[in-house]
Image 1 (cartoon, helix red, strand yellow):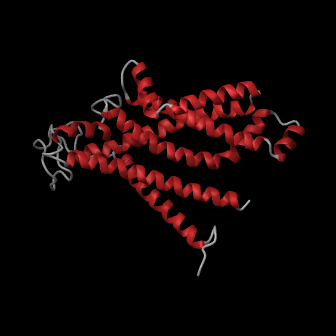
Image 2: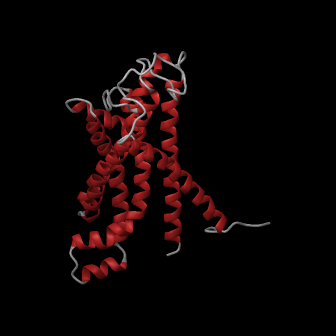
Image 3: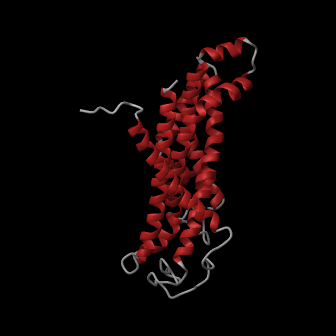
Length: 282
């Protein structure tokens, strides 16, 4: 009987397959999103065909209830999903890493207070927090959705950053750096952040997928990017009344959303295994 050892070549190949498959799926959406900046099959707001037409050579995915090309709408949806995912992760990372580092360096009572606050925020669903932030703004927009999702995701990032940073701060090389007179900012940027960044990057990939799904949910509820932004969630919302007569209008954005979410999760899983293998070799 053959026993596969941890870190064996066969396990490494499985991780590599997940990483490559995730990179391929995400890369396809990145390519489409960038392509929309220079080319689109049709004007996204032009009525280029009849209402609810099926797939054809002129309209690869058919048309919507207004006669607009659905494939063009889906392409723009890829760009919006990438914008929201990247923006939300950037906002969440900035707020979360900052709060997590401050909590790790804070006094015990302040650290405990911040930890309790983060636990309370994490207990609330991400979508609910995002809805409250969007509702508090003047009007729903793409940027308000990005800000809302970034704030909602920051609590998870802050908690993870705090845990990882506190582990690093008890290491011998941190004690040596403090003894040699290194300032706290120098310790953070030279020692703490480089050591926790690999694990944080995996979490950021997962947060990206959560942000994309949450934005689609917000758009479906009318709290995301308003028209004429062709968010996948808004396309699904508009297609719900014609799902039996023209199912492709609901199936196509659903497939696009699922493919990006699966791609991001596979990419995150591959990155996580790479990080685990690297940490295991130390």
